[in-house]
Image (cartoon, rainbow, N blue to C red):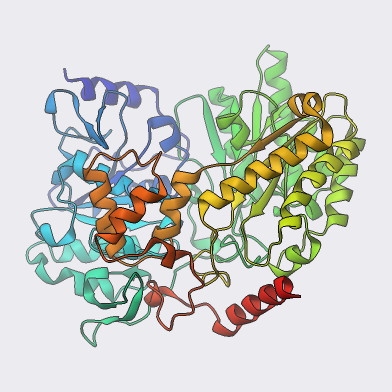
Length: 598
């Protein structure tokens, strides 16, 4: 028995379906397509990837979709070779559900969460033995390669590597894609033109590009008049969403999660959480799921929604989890609940009471990244300067933050806070950044806990395609790292070295990934070729320097610094997907400029 076979056997043996049984993926018949979802991480984390997991569940549940779905992950038995991964003994890369090689699938799907991780597509295709570039793949001989998720808000860097990109929620578009591919199995050569006419699907190969010197495009338009020039994201109504969209469909027995809400009621200019319509899961669906977890003795529950406080049934849901935790405690076992960050203006006395009475409560970032100081309550002031908060469309005033901290102090159970701040944004002054240190010091005083901990998490400002900030200038990540040093040192000076060591953490410095996000979030298709060069050269992309990236970009006629600029271009690389109001972009840019000059 091969090592991959042993590992997939172990995975199947410990996996537990959490939703009513779907059609077993292993049942493959000649009249159905085979779709394999590729995950760029290990088994436990793949179960938390609710986008592809929900699609996997949907395909295997619906008889009207002529396909079966499988999963292939980054198995423990794979070995690194530069940027590549190798299977033991050169055996074929297979899925969890089937011994057939992944390269023999009809369709493969890749979900890319961050634009700084686009190179993982190259590693997955190499591992599967699938040619990387669309032009090197033959219809009917190689799988159709489909990508999706927020990392592809600008899909252009992978335009020569992905055959299709799903925009928005893919349930409807993917089902229609599979029906179309199935209908054209005998003659697959012209299938891309049919796919391009499905709402929510972008087919990069069917667009002409006129590149600009140094980066960007002068023009992007369809090759034929039968191809739509604009692709609109597709979102579903609550009644059209199947349970796996709200619930993790499988568990390994250790953890499982829920998405009580999708989207956000607010539309901050720098955030794309508000792009899909806000929807809430039925309470009985969630409580029934908790009961199933208790039956299986799954002791870690993840509330994956970053806007959980907007869920109208949050109190009865937390009551239900608390009852489960009490019953487990009576058996000598502990239930841990992990909750995402919450808005300060949505924190109430009842919410804090319900959360702190759950028992063991943490925050996902602290669970995965920190060895101590679990973040029981995580807030996002974003900026210390009140007018910057307002200019970027956030309604989180200092008064609301102070009220939330007062509630945390009065609850007598909260001793750890995590504060998210953005640095390097247009309109920001040096004194605004240093004020973050004073803000953290004051919050610690206000919390008034002898064992209180304040964790300051600094995020570099990154203009996101599809938001009013998409054209704004960026700060060089090397400079932003220096800003982090200044804030950390300022906070240490304010509170003293001993207090800083005992009560504060300042987390920042993902410089290599931010360099990649700078060019991948707003670059054209040539950026993908530069990524491929770096990947093939064995460059450690987790420790990538600006010089390494800039030199490689230059060989493709690209200028790294051009990607940092304010993009006052008529045509953006993601032009076919751009639906942002131009006047809103200009108004925001002018207001930020005035703030600095005045």
